[in-house]
Image (cartoon, rainbow, N blue to C red; front, side, top):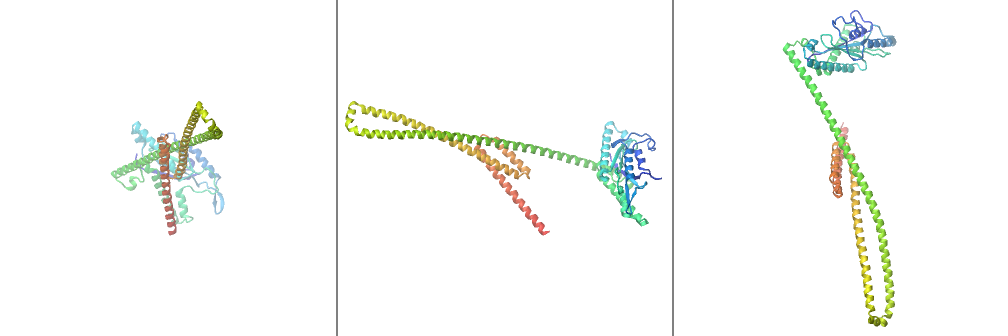
Length: 466
């Protein structure tokens, strides 16, 4: 509901004066204590927002003032009994109780929630105006308009008691000890300026958010039509402020959701990269084991081949020795052997034995070729996994260098994650694409480094110029 703002605060003493009530008196009125609210015909219990008793808070403020001292001409003195020690603030909402009663139940509940929200805003504003000194606050619904009372004051004794009323403080600072007519005018002008500034601050922090205008129609001498237009403008401003807050809150929520999703994707990508690194490490270990086993087998096979060669060499030497011996008798018994066909049978048996041994040697050579081919294949696969592992290490390092640019880092994580998924069965193509990605990251880091260097140079030039 729109209307003009009403907020006022005043300082009160412990004792009170003829025309001014004491701090305890206004506290009892706020509590709706019996006999302390003659202007309220049908009192209702206060709706406390801070504390549960204004009287209790007022007594604490009074007790602290009793124990406080003030400096006067360099000497410590007790605080005067008529010195202002606490503040009573009151702010009223534009909606009237009669208007509330004329509304439907749904409308009334909505406006009551708005009034309570307004009351909380008034309290926050008061806390900003008087830090650490807000003691009690309550809503009243038993007068013409819903309104809030706030009790302000220190409940801790002070060695140099000072005024907390900002208008009075401004008056004292401007006027000093000048009690002349001119001095009093200077003090009053300072007081009025501060209180107008207080009204402006209230409007900026509270009024504008709840459709309240800074000034009323009588003060600006507005016609009814002009005042209605002013109220509609205030309502529109309030709606615009409310909507902007909603949009800001929604934008912040979306940003928070996007940040959460990005962190989740980043963590998932890191987990996948670490998993793939583990797979690569295991593959390298397995390949090393296979290579070691193959090396051992190869050594054993080489030893066997060497043994066969030694045996063949020995057989050859024995055959040559026998041949030399046989040569001596060849001419004598050659004819005899030919006569009986023994020589041909010996040659045939020798050729058969040679063919068998030659076949065995050929089979052994083919077996060795297959072993060597398998070892070469395993060694090639081992080299590929080593390259993949090296690429992962380089990419991880480059991505860490891009942490200041989370969007680029996140894209890199996502792309690498997809590479592992698509090429997990093709290590050669995976290694090639990882090298390309690492090259792109290196270029990006180099570019950012150059831009940073350029910015540093420009900044140094500006500083030199200044």
